[in-house]
Length: 104
Image 1 (cartoon, helix red, strand yellow):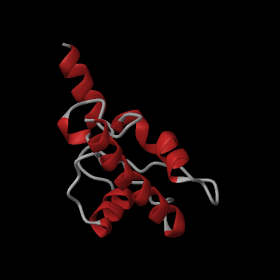
Image 2: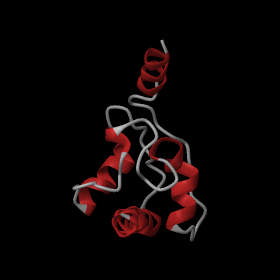
Image 3: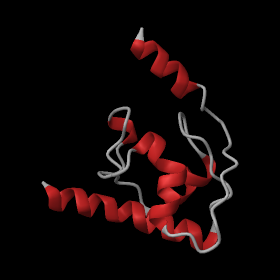
């Protein structure tokens, strides 16, 4: 029953657009905490399983930016994260993988 509830919650975000608006000049860590950590966890290793783990992402920067802005199967779109803020967020997400690797 718990798994079904989690699945329904996750599927309810499918094709959902987030109205999140980053503060001008926000740091990557701040944007990640505000927009991403709820599903991807504070350290990017995911809260709901393998598909939410960003620390091992093999996406190219352009692909990651597209996924952030357009969303995906279970990820809402964050079209308001763009320009410099998008670049800063992607750089921060990339840094999570290095931090996780060093901790191991």
